[in-house]
Image (cartoon, rainbow, N blue to C red; front, top):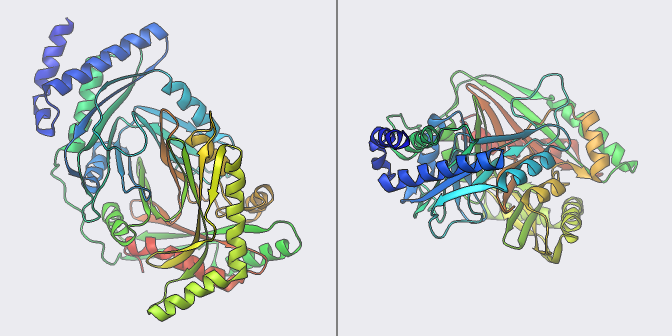
Length: 498
């Protein structure tokens, strides 16, 4: 009976050869699914099955376009650390959580699932950090507190059904040398290995083979119906003034205030074209796009939260902002304002101090850049300080580091407890995933997370675009408001909004 089912399975999937999934590949995947079902029966709990094969030179953005049509859940990740990429489609297993302990809950569930993985196939050489099946997704800045639940959970991470990874891409088209296709499924003793493998191959084929879909055109001007600032410009400036008064009274050293601008357009936003523009304009940023149903959270962030590769943990202090100049002389003048400002240096040093303290007890050695450097982006420039450590034996994994570091003073404030409490009572804005974290972890705890700034949440023809800035005791409300306007610009340009 099993042999007959296998024969029908192979005949039904003969078209998959065109995607590189030849007979041997299909048989290998089916074998992994069979072994995982057997293991689930023996262990009396679901088991993660994961099978891999090399994939040829390809285009990451095109793969992601196809993945958006292959499943209602997808992710694009282009790393600022090493220019590697990750594209996923579909879901093998969800790990979502709400509340203050959302990251810890996801971490615990992932560690349990990762204990028993049945693997097969072979990865290609030269892959980026991390091996095997991945957990991908993101977490909100803070738990939702309103009566209406936000579109994305407090924490939503998942094992993708299809994950495609590559490295060494060129910026033009993001073409890559051979990478890895990995197909994942969580099965129990009642699962049909033939149907599981057939479904995985069908989704992989949709991602790998050209589809008869229209390519996104370059973003032009978007016809806007209306926009709403939350809070209004004057209310936000008044909020800055209130925060300054509290800091001068000694309540806290720094707080980060965010703004949301909601846009309603005449037609749906072209998300692939917006990502294409972001990738070209901000090649030094980590580019991300998370789709969950009809919502897409996208961005190009200059700030990474933490990266763990081998025994090396890296994080980045990014705080302090000035505009870019229209001439070299004006640009240099803005840079001098950045490096000479006692207010900006204080804001920056608060962030670096917290990063050092959060990593110190987990690392045998810790190195902090001796002085901040200036990171120049297309529209703004920031003070930047790298922090790098060597893990002590038995040190934390990427999700535990994410829990330790999030939110940094660059996103929330300092001291953390006092500033976050004031934000919760006064900001009046549910940030959702803005200023949260987006990234991935492998089964050994290695991975990458970036801070989800320079971002937007899109649903059809509506978009919420976010920006924020750090407030200290000598902040000026008008200057801070203008800084947020500059930080909104990348997403507005990408979406074709003026």
